[in-house]
Amino acid sequence: MSRPIQARIDLNALRHNYLQAKKQHGGKTLAVIKANAYGHGAITCAKALMADADAFAVASIEEAKLLREAQVLNPILLLEGFFEADELTDIVANDCWLVIHAQWQLDILLAAALAKPLNVWLKVDTGMHRLGFSVDAAQQAYMALTRSRNVNEVVMMTHFANADNLRSDDTLVQLTQFSTLLSDVAPTTSKAVDVSLANSAAILAWQASQKSALPSNKCGTVWSRPGLMLYGVNPLSAPLSAETLKPVMTLESEIIAVQSLNAGESIGYGGLFTASQETRVGVVACGYADGYPRLASNAPVMVAGVKTSVIGRVSMDMLFVDITEITQANVGSTVELFGQQILASEVAASAGSLAYEMLCNIKRVAFKYET
Ligand SMILES: *Cc1c(COP(=O)(O)O)cnc(C)c1O
Image (cartoon, rainbow, N blue to C red; front, side):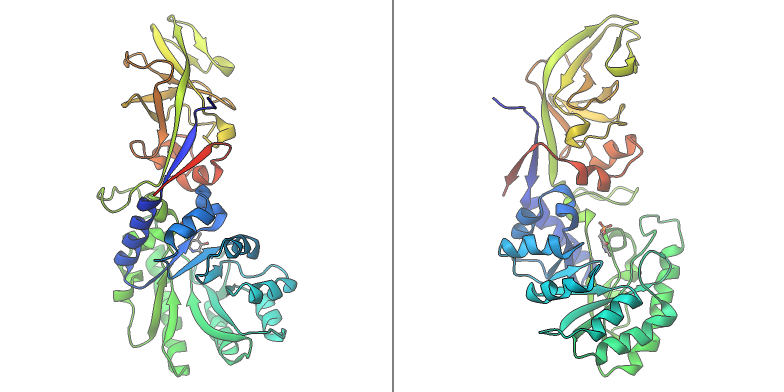
């Protein structure tokens, strides 16, 4: 018998979520599988999506090479382009697409002698102020790219800072900036401009970023870039209907010991939890070294099919769950930390974190892929 913690990965749910994103957005859909597919395993996830995915996106050529070595043949976009000029050889050799987000990258690309022209996504900063050309500089950059012998297709892209906040106007402001730019650029080119705007939150919440809402006389191909929703996590605070997204990762373990506390007794490091009455506690083989958030000391958890909560301080290899009311719970009982029944976003939120961060951190556990 080995340590009972495992992450079950439902690859059918992953495919379902990808197709949902594609349907909802209406354009082409690039599956974002950076950071080891948000902790789910990039190669296995890519293989599961290979037949459907229009393209994949990762954060670096190193992440892309792992996919190529695993025979993933779909286009792969590098979301931050290159960090140093000498990556360009590998980028061409591995047939990747490239984001160009800054003048220094553009200068290097235009001056390079590439064996083959690349598809380039020109990143425009419409208000997030993280990466991208200013709206004013973008038109010139676009023209320079379309004229370069190193460049094949160009996609004009932007990224939203606040699309998960339905009460904020930021997304509409960014959309307006982008539309204005599009209106300036479109007349200067002989063909429609390929564009990409929407991440998961925009796909789910902002109709105006979807294919049907963009001006068809100016836009060519419209790409969406879902990440989090592929893994079945809703980035919005408003709930979605259950069929929209299916959780992909279920983190499960077991109770390995049971403790009985009298009123006034504390448990675990720092005695963070003190029993106010007789309390039965399950000790679970899951800790922060597995990626479970250390601060999630009141998170919801499922024990033997019954919802209860984590108590006390999460330690490196173990945590505590209150099983006072779950009389059938005992050593060996199944514990779902999150997944099918407990929302990953709720657990992360209880630690002041996000499902994004929590999922990326899951490690040391056995991954069990289910097709
Ligand atoms: C990570 C990333 C995405 C995916 O975002 P989600 O919120 O996970 O859907 C999309 N676009 C860019 C540029 C990204 O870096």
